[in-house]
Length: 248
Image 1 (tube, rainbow, N blue to C red):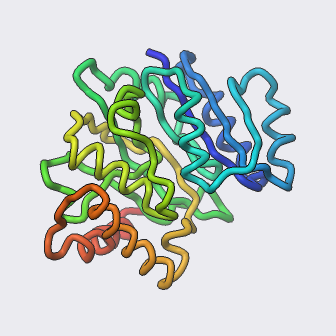
Image 2: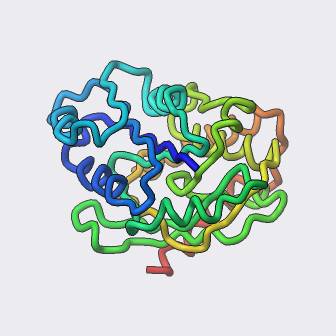
């Protein structure tokens, strides 16, 4: 099974080496690695180009934002399964993709796992742990969602149900998983182990103001899909993350 990994970047010179090395260091070799850069003004492009043909595809051009760049990567992907790894994140070990390939049986359309947030200054320091748990029907109504960097999806699902809605600025990953999992009920596999280390400090959680904007976009995600959330869905979603700080 060929797996396409998409990384999008913009001025990511400080972190993208860790991302690239974690992909190229995987023991699973049937991998297509696509990097979509938003015309960085730092050394990002030079770093990527220093890896030569180890990077399957590299483009650097202006885009409309993070999710527009992800959509470009999906359009370029030829693998049966697609995963997205941010340019400041990295895989937990060198067997992540082989374990994904083994767990991704023929009846599955999506797979997700667990994730740890690490300190941006010290990536060896774990800040919080996101343990996804087994998916149960209507879990999104209770505020559940899987960590997007651990989410692998068949390319055919993107072709059938669409890509990221780039009118959303911070919740397009949530909307996409809501659409695929809750609305269209794609069959899922849960890989119960940590597969990704994510640097803390995401845009949607950077401040109370950004958190409120993200909450507004979460509501829009449901509206765009003609779905009705539960009474406490948008309260339970952020509250469900509190337990992550207890699992260091």
